[in-house]
Length: 166
Image (cartoon, rainbow, N blue to C red; front, side, top):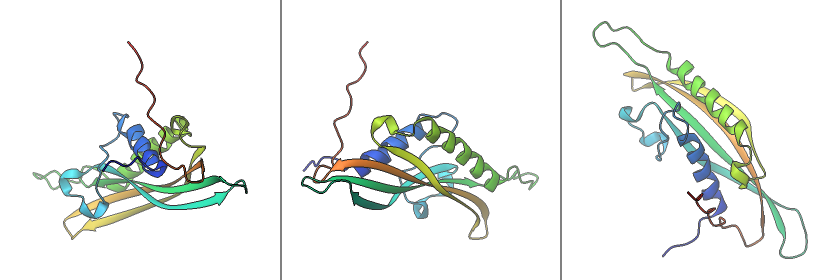
C-alpha cells in the first residue's frame, strides 16, 4: 500500500535535504538520539514534535494554519589522543558551531522552497552529557516552527517539481 506523504513528512524531508546539501555539516542520521552509536558521531538528528492547527476560514472546506514544531539536534563526541590522553576538542562548543551553521541555512530558505509559509527558530538548548562515564558528548538543539497553510482534508504533499532539463 502506497499512501501519499503528509505535509509534515514532506517538511521534515525537505529540511533534512537542506541540511544534507551542506558539505560543512556532519551527516544527518535517520534514527532517534537514543539509538545513536559512537560511530555515528558527529551527526545531526531532525525530529518532528507537536503540531497545532487553527482555522483561518469558517465555511467548508476550511483553510487551516498549521504550526509544526521540529527539533534539530547536533551530537558531537569528545576526541581524545589515545597516545597522550590529550583532549582534542570541546564537544559542546563544536555542537554549538554546527547549530550556528544550521541557523544560517534556515535563514537562507525560510520557506523551504515554497512548501511552508515561514520557518523560524523558537528556542535553543545545550547539554554536555557523559556516555556512561566513558566519552563526554556535546549536544545542541535548535527548536524550529514551520508554519504552513492547507485546506481541510487536503494535507498531503504536492507532487515534486519536475527536474530541471539539460
